[in-house]
Image (cartoon, rainbow, N blue to C red; front, side, top):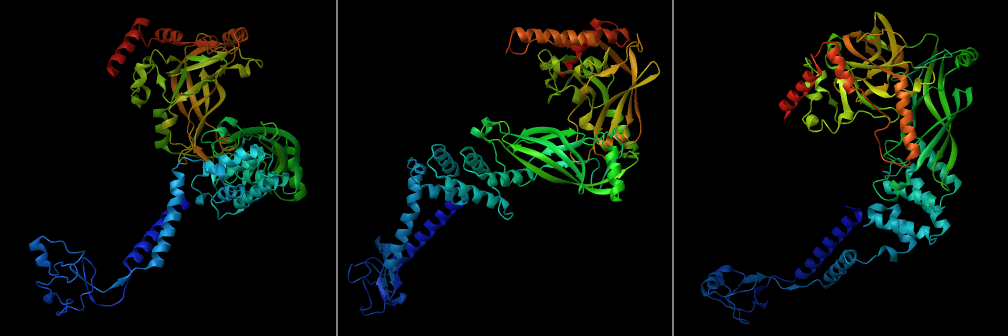
Length: 614
């Protein structure tokens, strides 16, 4: 409820009290007065102020009984009271004042319920005042909508738009004022109508980017940077709103949602204190400008800067510095006529240049390690697209014939809806204790690998863990460069463990149907990529995991079929082209390794589980 409605309600209440006070009036004396007709009874022989004197007495003017019992026995109606004390005179001034207040208070409510578009009848100055003071407006969306319409039709002067923009930006700078979403929307409308000058646009942009964050390795305090030209560091650029959303707007519905306004940022320079570390980086990202969006982009701006950082350390005679990053930030980057660019310099934090690669601390916790071993399993989906990335859906379906003997968290793998949708949603089906690897991958095909799930169980891992997956085939280890991470304890968990499919060199373990999978602690990756200060430090080994091989040529052929279909049928809906289906191969594999006697046995087991779930 707006302050205006509260104010109107209080105004009406005061007016009503004032009117009733005036109606009751002021007592002039202590004479007895007839409760029916108001006649002054002071002239009667007995004093009617005394209750004992009223028995059998009647008003000499109207004849009303003055004794309560007489009234009840005879069924007569006295006034509000048989006798009241004091003559009164009404407070005319109070009644007039109360009436005026009631009329003034009720008129706006009547007008609001009349259905008349009163916003269109308000002068510009009143609409602007209501935008600046939304708590005193009864219809903020209506006010903003009317003002936007007038601005689009050039019915609001440029000075008035400039003044409104300046007022809203002043409100944004006042930390004691709670930012209103509609103010952000009005700034968008002002800019769209050409109502903001360059100085105002710069102030608005600086306000919005003040919430951007650059996240370096480590959790807090001074962050460590390794003086190595191939320093493998992941820096997160989080283009998001401030906690109080100052300058931003909400896109609940309407034009803002359809607009899709975008940020664009390009990292230009890095400074250690006043020392220029690198210039002209040109790396950038984009993200949504509204308060529901933003973006988080990971990159490594320190690659190849080891020698320069050493030189700065030697020249400065110290190893700790303030890190500054200069951006070229563009608001409304995807909207012609609204795009605006400014150079912004942000303080990232304190960094320490070190000669030894920083790593997360390795800790031992047998209970957590045992929990990971219990709930995590290597797994992979068996139906996947070779071009379109399909992530894990909210409901994960697992092939029941790959869960034989698994007692851990069984309900997670067989939800009630699993078998109802078994035929329709098989593309979401995962196979537990399976590893899918691609063979024949060269430089050309390295980034052609479809994205697959690596393991399951991430929802149940407490962490902190960061482990690299290593395949052991025919006694040889093959690190995959893929990592399973879960910080735990701070609300940060991977929603899924998936990425580019795993690989094996040509000719490795030909004929091998099983492999071992090692989850090996990766403290360097944990610190520099996941920004973790500590991780669990013991290996976990899964023995005899099913190994399913897919030649990269098969992927290339499926991609070619998909591309050919799209070229021949532009804009067509999703098709069957481009998919690889390994489910039958997986069943044949389970028969080959002796987990089932035959394919018929697998189908019978699926039918049995389906019946139990139903």
